[in-house]
Image (cartoon, rainbow, N blue to C red; front, top):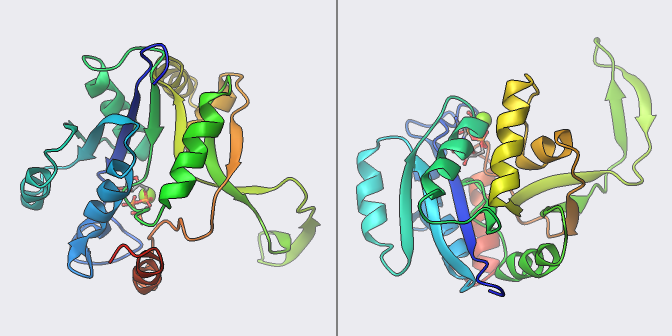
Length: 235
Ligand code: CTP
Ligand code: MG
């Protein structure tokens, strides 16, 4: 918004949803008549700050129908990769002709449709003023245990300073792409964008969001997501 810096989103939506165990990938399951993916797109597009969005998808017939409904802002399509990080890199690749290295990119899981409008705003505001980018997360509230190989407790882990990492994860386009490439070249396991940035020596900012930003993973998450969407007045 300032100095011509633009904001983009990359939505990895090319997973198979193994843990959900449905006939179709979980992002195409419906919550009150709309797919999980559409709820996620609606959440992102609700923010006027975003210049456009890259949707990373496999070749699914349903994608054409969905894309047709989102004409109000730039929507770029990219192909999925083997792991989530490869999908994200394909999404970043597709941004090259649109974004500049200093632009911000918000990577957000298609499987997180319930992210709040206000949490997105809080992330945009907090991270725009930070050097290293950042992500939504939440301090853990349960007591943490470390298990041994037999499933017995080997230690109670100090909870102080432990956070759950959510998405969106927001980084500058150039440094994010470089960090992901470097991590893959080094054989480092990339669990999220922040881990790649940490590997490259950055210290991303943790921005406190809300627990309703669930990642739909198993069947029991579907009614929960529906409930959270209803609570937000989005159904
Ligand atoms: N994803 C992706 N490309 C992959 C793997 C995952 O774009 N190769 C996306 C998923 O579509 C999802 C997000 O990354 O929106 C988070 O991944 P996850 O929740 O693990 O989804 P799946 O990999 O589909 O589920 P599972 O691990 O149970 O198979
Ligand atoms: Mg997965």
